[in-house]
Amino acid sequence: MSLVAPLFEGPIDIVGDIHGESLALDALLTALGYDQDGQHRSGRRLVFVGDLVDRGPDSPAVANRVMSLVDRGLAQCVLGNHELNVLRWESKAGNAWLIETDRAEQQPGGEFAHSRVAPKDFKEPFLDFLSSLPLALERPDLRVAHAAWVKGEIGALREAERPTLDVYTKYDKATRAQLAMEGITDRAREESGRWRRALHDRHAKVELLSAVGERDERMQMGNPVRVVTSGVERLASKPFWASGQWRMCDRVKWWDDYRDETAVVVGHYWRRLRPIPGSDHAASKPELFHGVHPLAWLGPRETVFCLDYSVGARYEERKKGITQFETQLAALRWPERQVWGEKGLLNVP
Image (cartoon, rainbow, N blue to C red; front, side):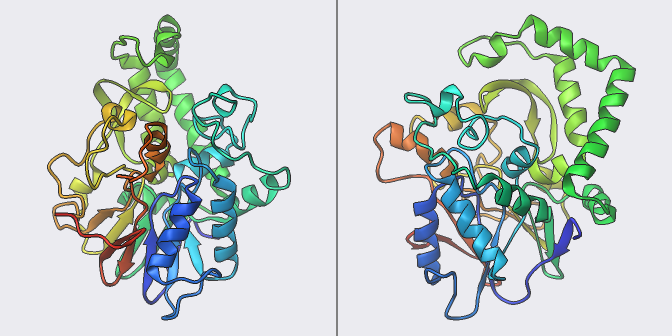
């Protein structure tokens, strides 16, 4: 299967990052008019932008529901960066529900102890499902990817004739070899060694590590699989804390350079309908939407829409005793261009 596949024809509902929030998914699909079997009275179908799992209370339930919908031809789904981590079997903050369930984060008192652990028979069918997913979907009037639609990278993926992991590995090895030849690998290793403990301590004062940043930027931008699933990244002006470590590369607004007429819908970049009081996420990650209306289209031609309204931070709200969530799972109705939430059509003043 091509890594850039045809998108459903007809009216669709594009669902943002879910991050294991199964009840939010139930509520959203009900608000959109889907029954328990995923059927819509008007024949609409669903498209998921990826990041189905991690952080939330029931990633297996979300994954099983989406797998069933895709298998029955009622939905499509693209691979997100969290699914890519699982496909590569890479341990990351929030995925101990499946990978290394004995990690501290998954144990009582851990940050994600609330996350349901996957049953023993879950791993193999889930990995098979992830291996089958495209990285992007397209039709004449609309494009869907998890994080970015960058012409050169999409072109490289269109030409790829191997499974996602093979393509990822090909570019990863080539970039690593080049970095080693230039001496950047050794410089980055020396910097990381000097700051080893501080890099995983969110209360530490960390300097910008230029060699680490250059290595990370090159590893990101030298791999089209990474660009499409986690975006365009460049050396940051200062370190920032995200997903359990200090980072030296900053996400950048690739949509400012997107000038095609065809609309693009992505997730990945956490927007907020309103400020989330005391959010660790809000306080740490670079702000890409400052001064932008939360329902606004992006880019010079207003043809890019980010559909991730931070439901992946809902576990933080629960820890603070918040029950009226400011985070939201949302969907974009196409061609209507309406943004729907768990209680219906969204209208933010």
